[in-house]
Image 1 (spheres, rainbow, N blue to C red):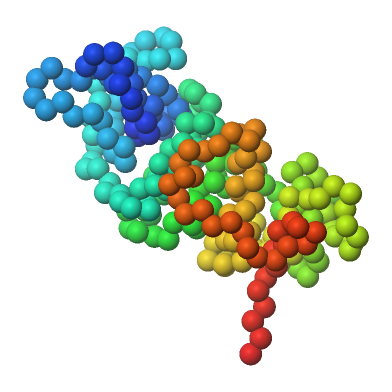
Image 2 (image 1 turned 90 degrees about the vertical axis):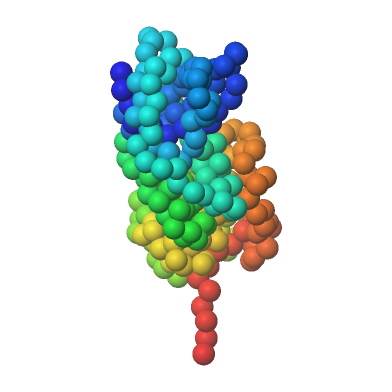
Length: 249
């Protein structure tokens, strides 16, 4: 079996072998054992390279019979490298093995190309996370209220994982929501307005909590490498509140 794949994690495995976690176009997440060459430079396959790979074996742990690079490695440094490691951890923790995720693979390649071009990190990560949530069948739906009503741009809503958006009527809820969101912020979030700073701020907080929910509270190690700035904006009843920043002249 041949696949097109990227290496997202490596670790030693017995003498002269390495275990590779692969993100493939054809079968999503795969794991295989690769024997390093006996002669010449023993180079371990690198991340950020698209490989043509031949796999053998009927179990979940494959034998990598052949691995050939299809292009030069993408050069990624600094904060962009840490962001890439974060994405790799998301894939390895959340994607089911041997299940095709072609759309997510295309999105991953777009992410690498954008990172190589030194595009701003935050919008890239938020866009990738949205695609990941959709692939998992757990998208964040802010297009309508939980009861199917259209959003009013000036209305403030409370957002819960279970009930979605519900209009906030002014009284303190018995159970506090994940956050309070103005309708206009939710509308622009659903349209992918990642250049809007208010949308970006809200989506960072929202996605962090959504990922914690999907991971049952288990920590992502790669988060330690990225800047960690706690939300210091508006709050209502101690809960983050997100509105469009209206600038007056």
